[in-house]
Length: 231
Image 1 (spheres, one colour):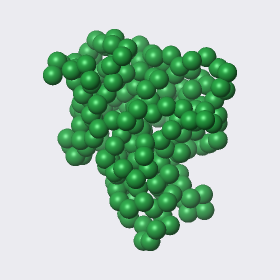
Image 2 (image 1 turned 180 degrees about the vertical axis):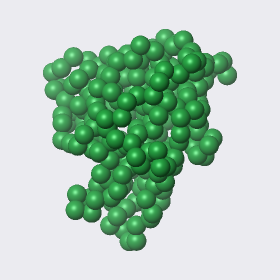
Image 3 (image 1 turned 90 degrees about the horizontal axis):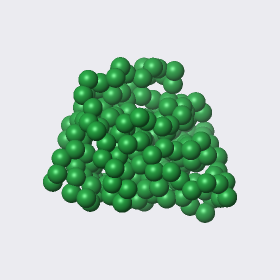
Image 4 (image 1 turned 180 degrees about the horizontal axis):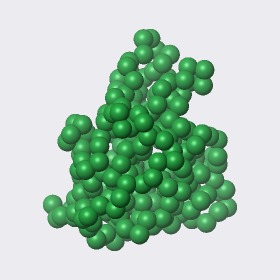
């Protein structure tokens, strides 16, 4: 990937990712999952993450799902932060850590050895606010499957919750789960502007390429806000 941000560029916006920052995040999708490489050199590799037939057949040119019937209005709370992601159907119940840009202009990943932690790009959109919120997670670590091991098995209509520190829980419904080759990653579609509150969950997928020492693809969950409730 290898794209880097211009340190003299404009500061991040809260509602949408600029083309420069989309390139930064694209570069970071692979870097955020260093454990994927390291685990392959520590003994017998574990099986690949689960992939449904629909996910395995997805292509980077696949069209977005039809607009869902129910959408919730976005909440604009610039100083809110997500604190916990729950996806009951795949057993995810994980705290958040904030992600920022490192010295090279690349998004810092979540800690590589924590199997139950997700990262939110905190210079971007707050989950539940208008715009596209970006959440990254490891699929595995040096020693074990990690928080997004089963992410690719999600299907359209599955719901998930993100609790925030403003005592609001944002509920999202999955629109699609797709796999994109890393060299054909659709930056604009994944990170681009949204007229409402959107969410992207991203991890690695495809098959493991021993020559490149990396997975060949990224799994992306596209979801939209369907509810906000006080907690």
